Length: 430
Ligand code: 4AD
Ligand code: MG
Image (cartoon, rainbow, N blue to C red; front, top):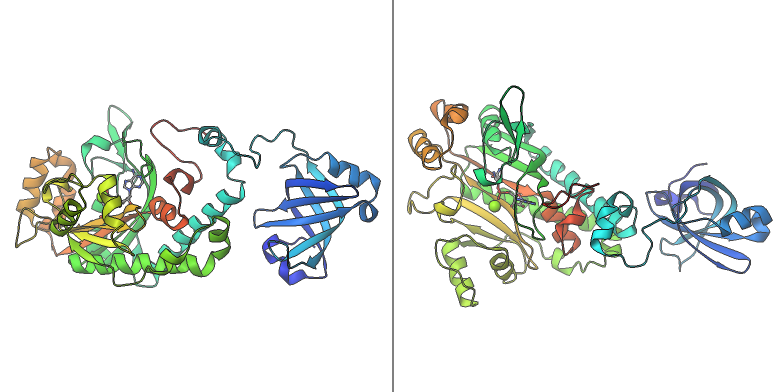
């Protein structure tokens, strides 16, 4: 009976059939030890000449890594085996033999691996990362769905910028028209929130980021909630709740994968509410106290975020950045109009910004003035201005970058391993 390796414990003492691939093989005289993988896990299959006969034994002796195989065997508990079970092989069928598989368990350079990303994802660590990514996304969806948020999709082809004109990807769109790949679903999310109250969108977003950093992709996935009748504090509470829910879900369900990654989980266990909330003013003072060369009024660089987030044992929320460093749609702080009602959530352990958001500018005249100041094409924003013409209310939300969150939870050096096929300034292959 075909069995998945992840279900193997249910079949102790029974014959099973595993359909998968050969991960590695070693031999000692009359026994082959085959590590077989089937996508759900890895198991050691022990093949003795006596049990399978000469022909099968010789076949196994020449099998290359990643050959597709179907293995029959009996499940035996073994406390020393990584998953707690081994397979005593009774039969082997080679579905497709692989020769000279290029991604071996030895060390390869990262460019070599990225060129072979379509194969690299079969490696145990990469599988663990992608399963954790799946869990993060599942946790995000459950979080919003169980709180009355409605999923409302926003377009990918858009007529104008959301997050600034310098990182737009233009696409030719029929006769002489130019569309841009979306940088964020936020503006449409705001319209959807006025229709449905609390909404979220979740999809790929695009930024022509010239920066070649370990935190930037040109195509990344962002989940964005938006709430009507909400202020900055509501936005911060929602962000805090989401991050706590996602981290605890991964700790609960993906221990095995975190183990494969050798992730020290104690910093993750500390991710509990409440998160510290500090103002931009305080963040500047703290950075200056730590000898960082920052001056009031500037945005934080990656290093500033790293230094700042290292000062806390859990995510920190930095609010009220100067309006000048944030997008056009941010509502000014009524008490200090040079500040915006914005918030960034910085992950601990030096990971930096994982969430950006805030309260939106809900006043028609001020919004129009901002659109003009930012040199944005007013015609493309008429629909957005309509939201301030017809029943405008305080509202806000945020965007959380899935890859940044996965990199942090997995403890990865670089964001490129958090998505099956990373898109970066110098890479769109494979
Ligand atoms: O801070 P950002 O630019 O905010 C927005 O786009 C808002 N419109 C969201 C909203 O309020 N609805 O991006 C949000 C998050 C960042 O905190 C980061 O996690 C991720 O998106 N992000 C990136 N992730 C990978 N590569 C990039 N180039 C990213 N740019 C932003
Ligand atoms: Mg941001």
